Length: 476
Ligand code: GLU
Image (cartoon, rainbow, N blue to C red; front, side, top):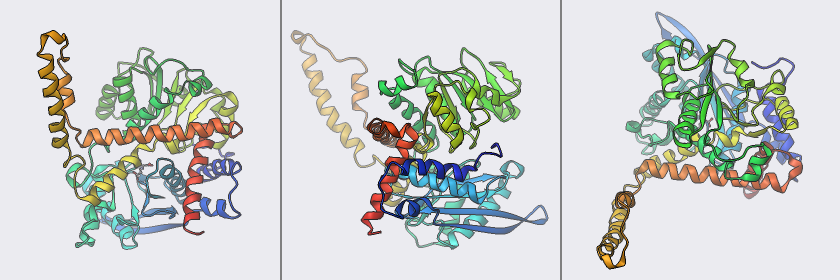
């Protein structure tokens, strides 16, 4: 994907880190301590599949242990390598610091194309990989807590949780060893869509900052804004769906593996996803014009571009031609450091990955807390809140019965006011608050240090300062 003349993903993250550190006055050696990846474990293991032994290579990188457990997903993809997981682990450190989840950064990967295997084969491979990691405490509720990433989902997390529980039969907290589990295996409501929901909340907060919008030459609200999304996987799909259904944004472009779809009137991500499910790609879908060279659509005119798939898709070869005034990085590392420079020069505003896609790890944090507290959020308070609300509503009803006062309750007020918050509502509220607060911190930094230049540098600065403070508190 990357132009060979450009640095790789890990170097790109390092370059962005150094750009931010240049604005800080850290004690000698601390910047380097923060930047380096503490350790990466590589494992090669064999699994008997289809009558022969197949060898797999997997990684778990631990970038920073300034807080434990360390946190980050496990990716299944054929091109996974050490550099990639280390870059992703570093981003996890900064991401967690930015959204104030009490974790260090980690990331794992397995070189595998999951589409080539049947479910029971994937289960065998996943359990074996989990066994290898758990044996070394690289899966552990207090030390290292994986989650889904590209190519993995709730299903793999359930296998991992079960494998860990089998190996640690008396650990009462074993469910907290991994997040992103299905509800019936200790998951939390709202985790599946959390990253996409976080992208939506991030955009909403950006649109509450008129000065920031002005820098992108945007005005008004999200309603009617033209959006192009690259990758209709879990993150891209949910972001596009919520933006369309709840903010009236228009999804005018969808880029997928086999090509892209374009429709200036907007498309329904649910319909396109169903089509992909049946036909394996977007080609043939009638609701939009098919574009063979999908990557060309990254350069099309729109208001918001959402790269939500692989790293390095916006690089030195196409950055100059990107016309979107606002890019929100739903994927990790979709814009290379060189492209970042070109886009900054052009005045494009980029809402950076370490903030934009932090919704996933935020709700993972809620899930981990739920697992450790062994109780669903809202279970103790919900009916109590409703009883309190009923007191007020009954009193208001009594007063509104008095015609002389001349006022009445709106028909749906009672129903809405009486509803205590359930787990999903609490998760959404916590996620919304997290995304708002983090954006405000970044935006303040951006305005306080105009010389820092962009939201990415500002986000790195906020994150690095927090990691540095935590090292200092430890006496390092
Ligand atoms: N894989 C996701 C990420 O890159 C989620 C990580 C997590 O929930 O721990 O942020």
